[in-house]
Length: 265
Image (cartoon, rainbow, N blue to C red; front, side):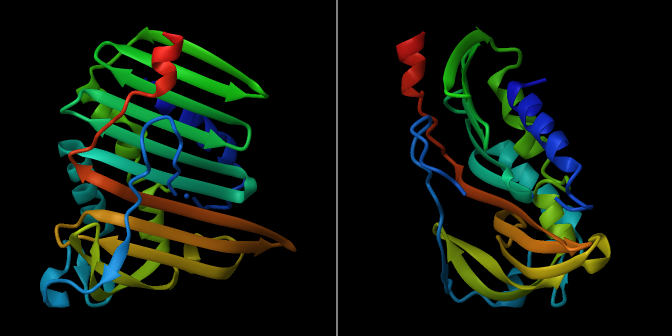
């Protein structure tokens, strides 16, 4: 199993006990290039909203969330990608942020994992994987033969393999109510901007407060930006939950070799 899968799933498992049936920004990190954050703007080339509905979307909202997950997963598998995701469960202390940059053309794959207690960076190219771990004021480096080809790592990375899970995009789409609102533009692409219409309450244990969300989906069904956050109160205890998923770049992605790889190896 890839290093990033072990890292992410272990952290999610540790967080999971506090999630009361719930689940989850990109950074400029100096370990893999600039963030490439995307921005959405109003307006498009005159496309009519209803004519641009993605698969699984009707006037009333998301009719088939699996169709949207599948379209997004296919886009990631077939292209280079730069994706960030965040999962907050209960409090800021239970927060993880991840960034994936992968290029089939360059045969390079980058992964960064940030939590309140540690930062792990993994970079793979050709037949070697390099790892930098910072924890407790100490930093360790390691290098080993890559267990998978870059092509396999590209498609098996958790951001792809677990896309439909409650801790990722699937949780946003299944727990939030989104209604198509207007055509917009995101990084030069036409997208359908959705209005947030609340949370599916029967999936949540407790009283929901301050819910918010956003969703941008291309007419082909690819989610470029999605988020869902809320505070859940139960027995006098209020806990914060947030999930985000953002495609910063899709297609030709430049995955830079981190400077520490050359310095350490």
